[in-house]
Length: 611
Image 1 (cartoon, one colour):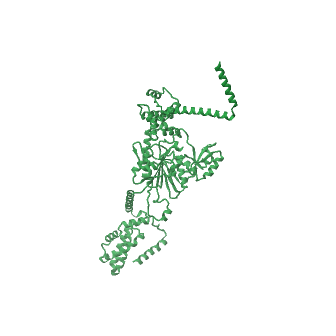
Image 2: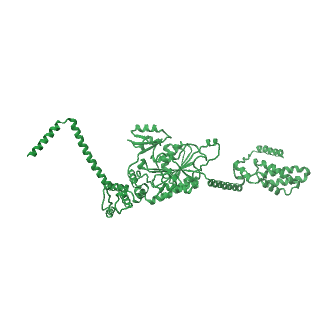
Image 3: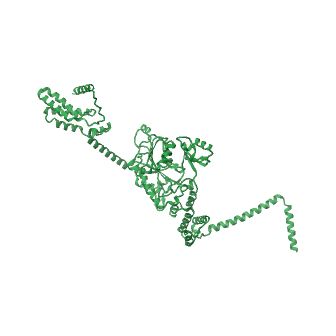
């Protein structure tokens, strides 16, 4: 009873003491109690994290894994995510947290199967991605691939300006921002009450819907508008990059848009017409033949956006997760190697010629300028990117050279992959990832074509062979071939016309007197110098008749006949020493007799004066 009374007294005293406390003192006691509670919760959480990070994660047994594969046990997505997170935590500190008698490959195998079940990938494809990015980055890549990429449009400067287009779309209720500092034409669409692909501005060709990553290969081409610029797009469909190239060219020069399938070029032509492109030629040829037979050494810029597996655009095409296998990627790599060789052969050589500065100003894209090949894919696979570029460097070691892409962002390309080692300049290429740059997975490589001594000698040899073939054709065709003044001078220098004239004179004048034979060589030399500018029609039958008549006259006239014989021989030399001329240069004969007579008299007077 005394104890109870004491407790009652303490309670009463505490109540009286609390009632006697000031308001400030009450607030301080309350704050102290809250601080004590927070400290206790922090200690408990700290102990929990220590136990979690230092605990050993036990992998599922083989029986559990078999049941999961047989679908006898269906795990919810939350448990699969927890398993993935736990395995990734173990792999960060594998020595301390691994399960005894379990290797790293066991954890990777279970992680691969769990990710394939959760995200719907083929295990073979997921293993390939893991070998490229690693466990942690692969998980980030898979999460980013499940999300849609931001909507980006490209302003068509052939029809409008970016600020005018932004003002027009803002009036329609769209919320947009400039894409980035590296792009002067890109706009990032945050939201829009109307479909972006159905606005009047879109139908008028003021912009095109195009991903941010697909702008990078065109920027790497380093295009400067010029009327002599020639550009080739090897795989152009559906025409997004082709339209951007024509926009940078300002509708100047020539742009060849090629694609292997004719049906795909319909979309390319429609887009180019909508955008107002006028300098583009659309064709459908096998890209592997462009640089060998169709357009060898023809272009200043070549873009090869090669067909690939599409591992970088899974957010737009989720079917890649279940459709693509490692065999498909290897088949794509074989095609890409053939295409990159053909595209590189379609480039002109980069040479440093010693031409005048005036000539270089007139022809901005002459042989002395740099010729560029840009290789790009929408894939993150090393088999389709670095290995393809390495193949080109090995096949064209003296001509191909990797240069910086002039892109300020992006991760450098791989210089090593598993047991493979690539050229050190492979670090100049650029890789883009959806989980890092918030754009489609892309790869861009910029290659310059140089002219070496071996390539120049081979070109000269090809040119000499072509000239020899032309000379043979000219000799066989005779006077029916039409050539320019330059080609006439070359053929005249190669053929010894004086020797032919002497042989013809000896054959025709073997019945003449020996005194006349002494006169011919001196006159032949004088006549052959002026024979290149004359045009004579060869008629052997008429010559023989006129020669017989003149021989009879020389026998009857005596000494005075020697002068006439020298004139006839000079005319024969003129007729024989003239090289064959073209039939197109000959003027048509007039049917009017009055017009022909004075011309014949003039020719006779000129011949008498020359004699």
